[in-house]
Length: 162
View 1 (tube, rainbow, N blue to C red):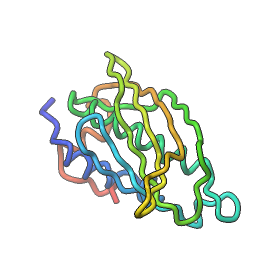
View 2 (view 1 turned 90 degrees about the horizontal axis):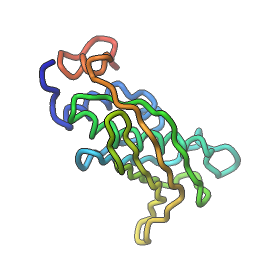
View 3 (view 1 turned 135 degrees about the vertical axis):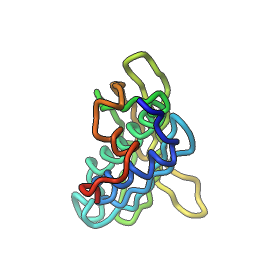
View 4 (view 1 turned 30 degrees about the horizontal axis):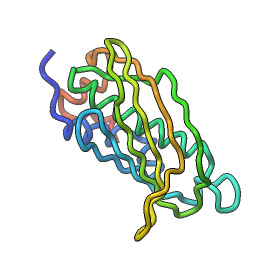
């Protein structure tokens, strides 16, 4: 299999195919292998009660950051990942218009599994960020050539990516 492109290329393709992230206003930044930061602002469609964000929105953001951190590290070994499990603790309520930052970091790499941690912060200008959730996830590693994602990285963009 030919070598895969660098992390910037991976992020560009991932952003194209990640409909979930786009639909939820999530922006991905990859500081380096094993690290992924997502940002998003809580919108009205994220609310479960007046002014309060649904916990599933935070879980989706957490899973995205945990998985993207694992993916960036696995990617450097020409591998992809899938979520095996993740656990999170909710620490504080999140409200309409809150800006969130999720920091995912790989904590352990094994032959078949990666473990990532994540902290989701509420970002308030001029004040310290407040941790609103913490979590840990386990991810299965597998060869990139087993999925269409690897094909997208090696070839021209296909018509089904929007």
